[in-house]
Image 1 (spheres, one colour):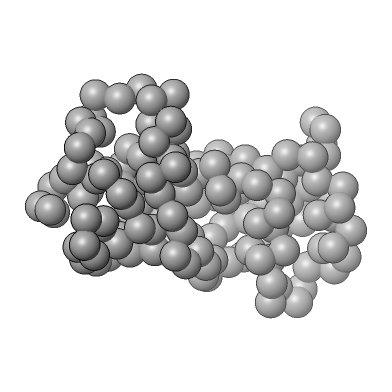
Image 2: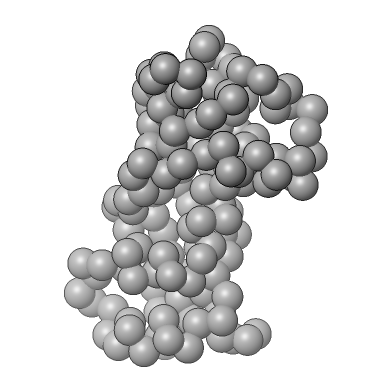
Length: 144
């Protein structure tokens, strides 16, 4: 598969799938692991009702390989994330998502001409091989 098609795939389907995964509250302990200066983060996570990426760059493709009929794509996506308890903001997280995704049927679809619903219908074709968070920093908004 060509680099241009992989970049389009990253900016469409993989952006939606990664965003959906990162915004899962269950990802917070993984994301915040190793941040020693955040006091009581387990309690904050237990109170969290919403996690939202409010700013991000498009995923940057670092590498890709064809694996049989699938494509393994390694990418990074810097983002800013807010966590909320109802309408009260709790945390502001800055991180870079590093992911390896195995994508089936990558050549079949015209990713540029699909809306969000059509893209999310294709999420079954994406398998996370690896998902990590690097260069993570966190601000406790409750302190302000």
